[in-house]
Length: 524
Image (cartoon, rainbow, N blue to C red; front, side, top):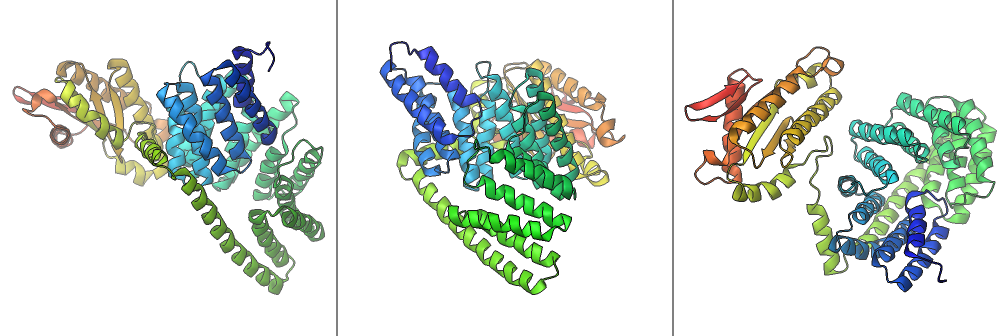
């Protein structure tokens, strides 16, 4: 290192690795290792651990999951101990990717949620965009495509507003998620936005993005367009800037599918043979399994049903073997993750941090169980309210569960906004189904009831026509305060609120019921 190197220069260089997508993970790993050495000379611990996190990310992208995990524990421990919030957010994002690689969608989603929750004014614009994008990816992988779309939309709006170069990658991920979920029309709409943006920017799409577009075109029966897209993809790949081992075989496999759809069986066979050769040379077991599957499809398309059956048997055996290999790889990585007591403690702590409901983004019951007993002990005037949607089953049955989910998300937003405006120290949680909990510390019972009735009116008066086609959306609210009980506990407080929620339902719904000196007081 020369005397001209400063902490500012190293920080800016690290930011390039952190916030700018590079397709050469090995080169970026070497760069991060060099920056760590320079940071050691400066004695700057934050730079050292930022460089280590970059190394973990590049090891993960290179397929070295165990190597990534080894770095992650130390980085996360230091970030927590030093309250390095931005570093913690980035760390959770990489944990999400690690768990996704291990096939643990639930843990991946928990970490993705935390990576967004930790964002603040010190986080870069790219982080606000990319962390929301990866949360959307995690929601899709967990089977919550409706919730994923909301996060993709948030990220896209911010990327458009700020002119972020991450927009291309974001649209690619969204398009693939729709395609993989079987939503072919939506996938094509997003892919078309991706293509238009590329044209507007005069920026050729990366081959991986073209592969996504090609796969979507195949899925929608646009085989000629897909073949042209995949030939362009392979041509750009062969320019030499993109050298992931499995990239070209993946592109050839998509090309073969397009050619089979066209009825160009000889061209499809040539593409498939080239793909198979590369898989053998590079030991790409997972791609080879899909080569067997495509070969069986090609035989069937030609009317060669005996050959198709024989190859399908090969595909099934290879598929079973691949799953076995993947399980063994995941087991080895998990052993690396939990080989020390410290790692086990950290993993337990991460699990305990999963305090958000994946559909609405509100706190969940775990957070309530952690926080409410403490508030009951420390805040004598504490007020809680159970909020339940009225006739919610009618919305699900008459419209659809997807519409029901969208209603829940919108109601959650109204509740959270009302609490944030009227009692910033409070919070809203989803307990399950259509039931929510509002916790209001530090305000009087009278003020709490006024606030809750205002929230109830906001829900009732909201324009629901777009979602429910005229079906009303209202809530009933049961309120309890610590002052209502001689020795309040979480179970007794929630039980009291529940009985008043029942009274609100029994009295006609769309009302708030709370205690008064004369028994019950209701606002409707």
